[in-house]
Image 1: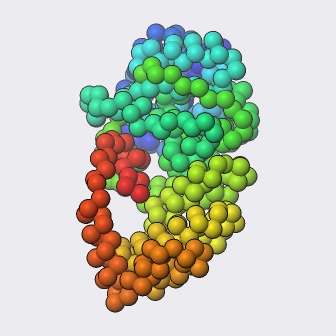
Image 2 (image 1 turned 180 degrees about the horizontal axis):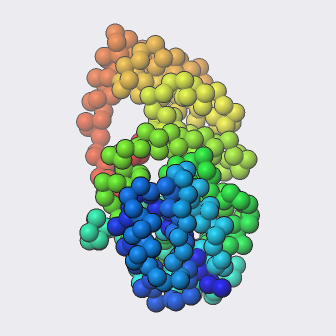
Length: 366
């Protein structure tokens, strides 16, 4: 029985998935199996793989198109390994990846999930940037506090998880309602369930950036993926562990929901503001978020009526001068407030965004 199972979901990537499989077959650690789950490809993927791989370590399964989460769950069910690694069909492992990850888990039996470093690369594999350059620091309050704000693991194939840890969640392990955020959701739920995470600085993977990345705005399924991101955020807000998080983490999560993930969706924003999670914040924090929401609504979305409502609510919670001023300037189609905000932004120092990954660019500047 193999110790490591590498699960590769794929859809219409006959050439790329071969490169992903090849990156596993050249591993310095030999005790593994590759589980390829074809999620309804129509580009001849099955024929290509059956002709190319006679290696009995590569096992192929086909299913009707149901999404990557369903494919990953099926891969887990078909797998046998003590350790699991989830490799997307457009990415690669570095040759020593399994050796490094297995060695770490063997030395640290108390660790459930280990994640290493890696490189963003272009379509041809040219290395662009270390993944760790974009990972946030882990605060003293623990991993969960920052994991709700960022996908700390970033690349799913930079991580290896013990099969026993997946038992904390039960089947299905990946939420099959999600499309594109199911890996971040898995790590978050594992951390909330008590799984122990550890990291190291050794590069173990390549994360390929190309025009067909599922997290890219140019992807034809971008709109569906963004709805999945929103579903994931709502799910996190409603989670039982959310009230246990430190104030700064909850406040920043709600800021991101209001000003990034549901930007320009006033009905969803109103629902968030009315939620128990929002009202559990101190009054000053509620007021600050309402103020920022009001300013954005007036200046960017030109919705004077709704923006003034947010600003009035902020002022009712905290009689700060800038809230009063913003409400007073939110007149005449919001022009005075837009002029003031525009001037302040021009005078503010520019923040350099060095992010390469599409899923970071989507929320940059929020």
